[in-house]
Amino acid sequence: MDRDVRLEVFFYRETSGREPVREWLRGLNKEAKKTIGEDIKTVQFGWPLGMPLVRSLGGGLWEARSNLENTIARVIFVVARGQMILLHGFIKKTRATPKAELDLARKRAAKVL
Image (cartoon, rainbow, N blue to C red; front, side):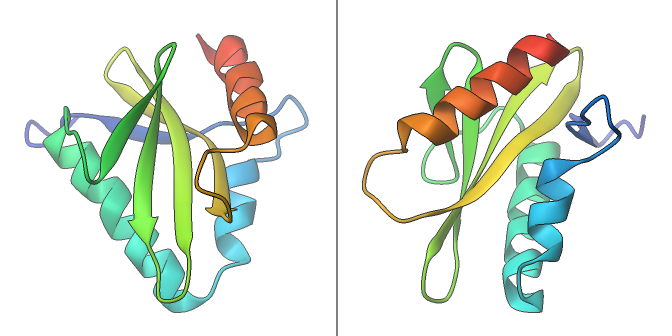
């Protein structure tokens, strides 16, 4: 691992081989992908970070907060053994993080930790 990199970044992978966050990113426009990618890189090289880019969701879950042109994106991740594991990504439509999004991320976190 490069000594300037604080965390290695990995996509959560299901037993089927699917990588849901990578698939979600592929469906976004080029500008959104670029913004989210830069935000993930900022976390990767600057960990630990706090608001406004990173917020704790409790239980070891964190969210990277990306402001896109007309919306807000979130990537929920965990940090373990020098790795940032991207569990779930979504476009935020409500003020609070929806319970279903959190539950899915928690379920995936339990599989990787």
